Length: 287
Image 1 (tube, rainbow, N blue to C red):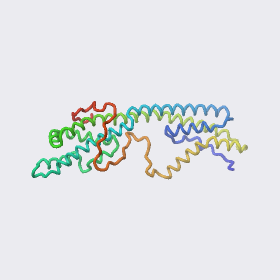
Image 2: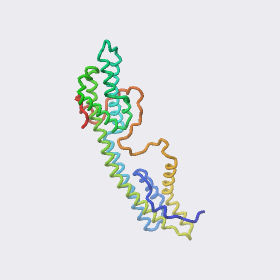
Image 3: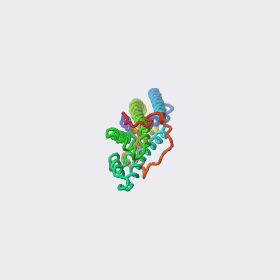
Image 4: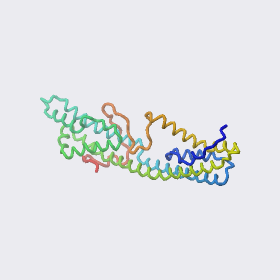
């Protein structure tokens, strides 16, 4: 059995987020020796309190983010995808008519290129905030170039009416997510730092229990600090193994990452709050 103990590794704050920080803190509290001296017991109490405060903050964040559920967001996103996809398909369909009989077919083809460019609907697979920007730019171009009467004549007024309805709701959703993410990141960072500080304080005091002349104390301290060692070992393995396609947590806005093949399917009516209340057929880009 190794009779040496390096206490220096425990004076460095572990790399954590709020979720695994709470888990690590609770594991350390659970592993604390029952016969720990008073200074260790006090540090354990503070560590437990920091973990509980972090858990409450995390629960509050999830409750706040639950105002518009992920399913609501996905339904709204599918509606927006379908709305812009439908307009493009409608114009493409018109452009396929024989131009010698239907002269506007050439104009429909030009509008497809003018509005959607060479990338077509690829923007619909981007993250929510990026998609919102592209959709708003398309609407803004239609307004500035006064294309609505022409598009209504070619495709029917229903298409831009629907876009005018869904885009304001989509913009509100994106802004709400970004604001909540920014506020939550800022607020939770305080709790993360508190947990890190409490872990270092606790681990340092536990390490102080070691008596080099008493091998049993070394083993007891190693057992008490094993959750911290395991956390660092897991982090080291992830660093060595690389990303390997793993998704990163905490990305603002939530990248969709779901490529749409072919035309987007028309979704069910959205359940997001305020659905149908904005837009109402008046085409306008979000401010």
